[in-house]
Image (tube, rainbow, N blue to C red; front, side):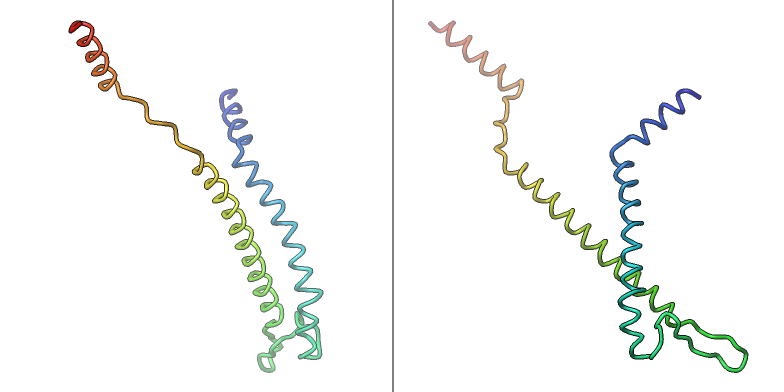
Length: 134
């Protein structure tokens, strides 16, 4: 059981897991911002066309009293599209930063190739032959 908890601690404290947890928390907070933008700014502006709060716009389905809440559905779709756009832009920005970092690493001069064992032995043999020739 002790080994299980040690493995779990290693897993939980790895950078990727912590980064993911932070991303989920920030994403949840950002979701509230987008929801407020939709509910408090975009829906009232669209609602001007319908003379009502857009999220309350419904399509009546006959005399049965069943209504399609088309306004609420469209609000959720707009919310999703904005979140997807923002996440796309964030990932694109992070990828650009990563690419810049990799370019800087690639621009560093490469170390000269070290001779192989065979090449070293050939050089040693040549030196020994020169000594014997003298």
